[in-house]
Length: 195
Image (cartoon, rainbow, N blue to C red; front, side, top):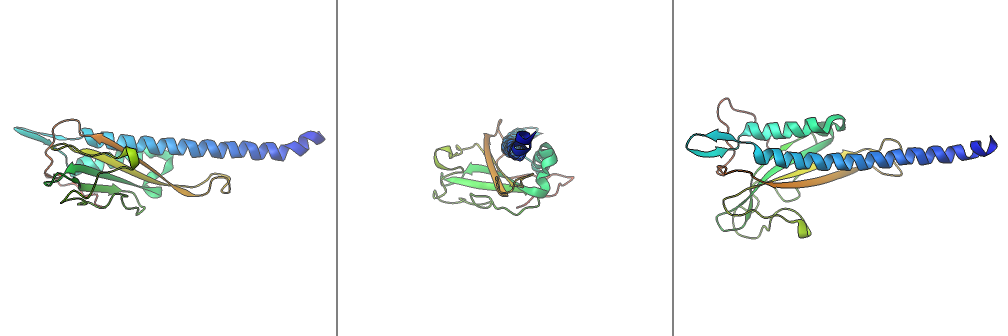
């Protein structure tokens, strides 16, 4: 009994520490999956047009962002984070260009690659991503680039894993031909999820 009493606080601390690490790892995985799903959903969304290329609408952007919040579930991503969806394309000079950008969430994190319009002219903007993971669009194609920020709060031990912002990205080529002239908003108009 005495040995058990001495070891109980250590065992409790180890058990709760293990729970905190599991929760932290699980949140990282979930935020990563949300980024992948956001980019994938936006790369597939379209409105078919008779005699023309399909169009991406404000409604499609809103629904992709809403799906990310629903996927977040009890993470409360809308209140505790920010999702940014960018369309990476090639500008008239052959450089990379963030043609448009849509955001959602109550936090105010900006894109790590700049606002909508970054790289509109010239070739100075190299693309999105870092190091060997940088992506670049090809001419007449677009890449849906998703950024997800999430403010992680520890469950038990703040000293073990302090509060921090988890940041994940994902990129997907647009699956089919798409009218890349912009984001369309046919009647009935949907609200614009501007950044």
